[in-house]
Image (tube, helix red, strand yellow):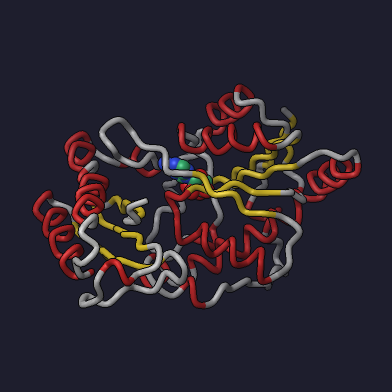
Amino acid sequence: MITLTSAQIVQETALRWKKEGHAMALVPTMGALHRGHIALVQEARVRATRVIVSIFVNPLQFGAGEDLKQYPRPIKEDSEALEKAGVDLLFRPSPEEMYPPKFSTSVRVGALSQHLCGAHRPGHFDGVATVCLKLFQITQPDFAVFGEKDFQQLQILTRLVEDLNLPMAVVPFPTVRETDGLALSSRNAYLSREEREIAPMLSKALHDARQQASDGSLRAGEILGPVTETLVRAGLRTQYVSLCSETDLMPVADNIPLDQVPKPRLFIAAYLGKTRLIDNLSLSQV
Ligand code: AMP
């Protein structure tokens, strides 16, 4: 595995590989890698002959008071894990490399960024879209793999690629979970022992709702109410519990029956102490 910090050298390398006829994959990450990230890399490895992984804790996507400084950066362990997973190139730029002093462009994917995390983290998805477009330009992938764990991000980047006619595909990958259901996340490391015991309630509430949703005549509000109640009772502070159609990520009104929602998906963001956790699950019964 080659490790590079220069955007220009990565781009030259990628263009050379492309010319040689390689199928190229990118897996963008912020590091502190876990089995979820490695599963994305393995998916890329199966489909491509050159796999590039980026590790960049992107300041643009962190708001004031969020965990930019504190975000874990275990670079030695991450490098070893990527080497073992058969990655060809690790791109690990500094913030100055990505955003030199005169940098002034921002990419905004409109409607899809409005609700869910977009409503609670102003500017977050502009930061994500901007860094990802840069990473796509630098690494020239035929496809990039993104996890459904961050479903809104996945939809936003899919739209960006389509809207801007980028010659690449966005490949979704299902959420990888612990045996107790907790979605793997680099931020799970922030949880105390007591909080870690409560954390699986997110996925439990989602899966319970999915079971309930087999009755398609239930209205959105009848699904959302019990979910919020379960979470609050377990000691979580919910930021949002929202039922949306996957197609537009617009929250569905409480009085709408589930079987009238195309591709319904349930989204949760909740705080456990200071740690913000997110999870989501399709409520489609097929
Ligand atoms: P992050 O390092 O948190 O920015 O995540 C990098 C990529 O890994 C994103 O596409 C995430 O959606 C994906 N990812 C994070 N956690 C998981 C998980 N538990 N299962 C699948 N993909 C994940």
